[in-house]
Length: 325
Ligand SMILES: NC(=O)c1ccc[n+]([C@@H]2O[C@H](COP(=O)([O-])OP(=O)(O)OC[C@H]3O[C@@H](n4cnc5c(N)ncnc54)[C@H](O)[C@@H]3O)[C@@H](O)[C@H]2O)c1
Ligand SMILES: O=C(O)[C@H](O)CO
Image (cartoon, rainbow, N blue to C red; front, top):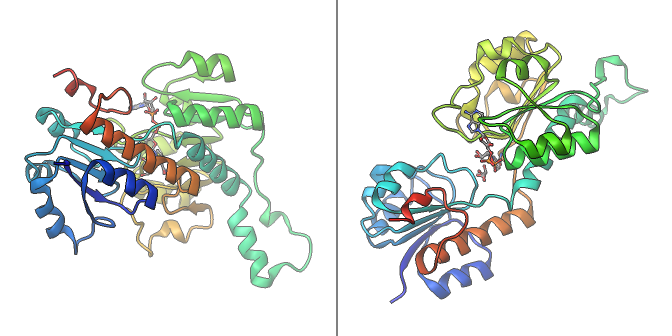
């Protein structure tokens, strides 16, 4: 008999067919309040889970006594209780690498659109206000040759350093838990402490995971250390920044602007001040949202689950210690 798995995301037809070759699939398009009771009930027989979004905490896991593997269609996995999985020997898989370049492109889009006020000025023109050449009230800031500070020099941080340094001649500063010699030799990047990163960066770009250590790493005190003409970009996870403190800093002119893809609570409330501030570009968590990359993430997650339940896991496992058990 094929193992039972729960899919909680819409997959392209060919990938659904690949999943169904190996498993009996119970499908939910996504997790909602409406389908939660049915989802929780289906957990009783599930050996695998695949999807994205939603909180998969210990209470949910406890309803799945047969669960052996979880495959998230994302690189971030902060919405899963990985410790509880590890204790039970459940393998946790994710999709690094396939989205790295696309997310780094999104960071560049946020840098350029905030510094050059792309959205604001395009809307101004569209609204019929373009009567002659624009005045200094609509000028932006240069990007090229400015200092980029990268907080979290992992896969995405490195792809960003490449774009910024080789493409835009930007000196690179970075902070991470450890130095990255490859990024230093390839892009002449300089490792520094967080305070130096805050005070010397023209563009401070966050590509950190959400962990207990990174939660509210950037708050009022840190924002005060930034340059008044600096721009803060966050494509990591929203709760890395204290959002209330950021809104205050943007209103007070403590920093020049922000480009955001992630928020403390998603979807961001329609009445959030972040949508109204002219010095903010607020995207709806689209860091990896291209046709090609979203397909590749789904394909990677499907293969991850097949490997975890029917083969030998060699890559993309976040709790490799369970494999040794
Ligand atoms: N906006 C989006 O759509 C989107 C898309 C992909 C990834 N992400 C987020 O970006 C994160 C990074 O992705 P990645 O593939 O580059 O991951 P990664 O693991 O390669 O890089 C993360 C880096 O952060 C560093 N780090 C962790 N904790 C730290 C701390 N306390 N202080 C300093 N550095 C610390 C790690 O050492 C690592 O180098 C993901 O975890 C996810 O949350 C968002
Ligand atoms: O972590 C990721 O892969 C993105 O944020 C999409 O959820």
